[in-house]
Image 1 (cartoon, rainbow, N blue to C red):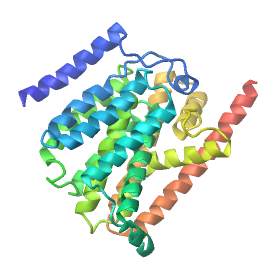
Image 2 (image 1 turned 90 degrees about the horizontal axis):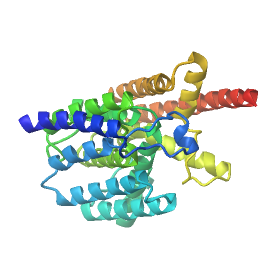
Image 3 (image 1 turned 90 degrees about the vertical axis):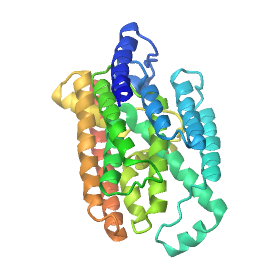
Length: 340
């Protein structure tokens, strides 16, 4: 246990050191990046996350290998070595499909007879599971535009799975989660203070880790509706899917970043209406999204076995998202036109 407290102290000291020395900084001047943060902040969060996760899975070298690989894709993106979105996506596809096939990590039930019949086809099952993981990983990266949003969302999902007893010792021991939560909380504090960001590497890592936990839990708890697991991750996944459709409609490449995501529009609304500083607008916008997602996940956790209940609430969440998006988008466009 003493080594664990040493590691927490190491995170704090090394994060402050990187910040002071100006090492591994994030800011490149890209429009989408400067939208809600104009300061140089070290992209060190992913490094601090990967080591405890690896420690918890020392007996699973396959999982560790793919975890490191998916983190490195994000790390090279952060370092502007792997700049091309197409190349990043290609390496993600290779990594995820290989992982799903080697570990036989398949979604086995949708509670829709016709679709379950299709899922019985092994090739399609591998494809569908890979598709879901890719959507979650990239969606996790999308919502990481505000301080603490992805870390807080991950904490909510993990806590919900733990409180419902949906993570068995076959996946990870409970005591390990009680150790990783303080790491998340410390990184959350450092992130909200603009001392570090988790970066693409950290976002890919968290998305991959959450996807692994959720699909593994789905396989070990057939009495739980598969749509409950969708409820847990609906926000990053829908953010990604909605962004793809939005960009295609505008004849814009889905792989290229922009500043029209829901969290960015909310940030603009908060900053414009309340006239707060960048960091306070950023943190408040993140807190609003975290609060609403906590409510959604909590309400969905009341009846995790009911498919009808979950589907209705997912539908409500999506409608609420779309309405909020277009209201905020309208405000942004009116404000921008007024400036002109």
